Image 1 (cartoon, rainbow, N blue to C red):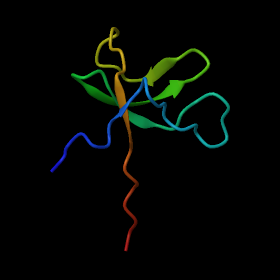
Image 2 (cartoon, rainbow, N blue to C red):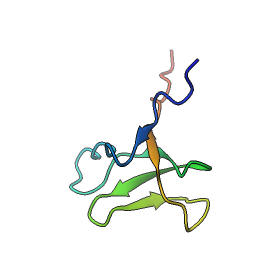
Image 3 (cartoon, one colour):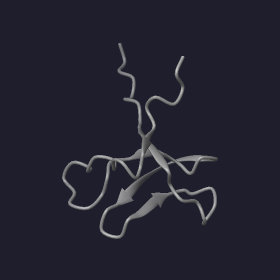
Image 4 (cartoon, rainbow, N blue to C red):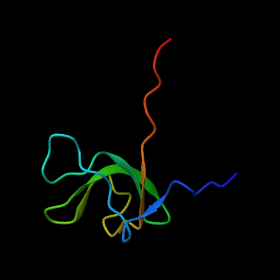
Length: 72
């Protein structure tokens, strides 16, 4: 199985905008290549917002979050 096929390089493509906003991405999984966290991108200042494992963490890749399971 190809484990990293859904990771997108932040330099090649940014996450999609959150519906109804003008400057924020939707929530995504972010990584600096060592740690992962959930956050979003503030396109106005280029900052990644969310819990960063370290202040110096620089996002290299992102991935869309899975959909919430629907109750049957």
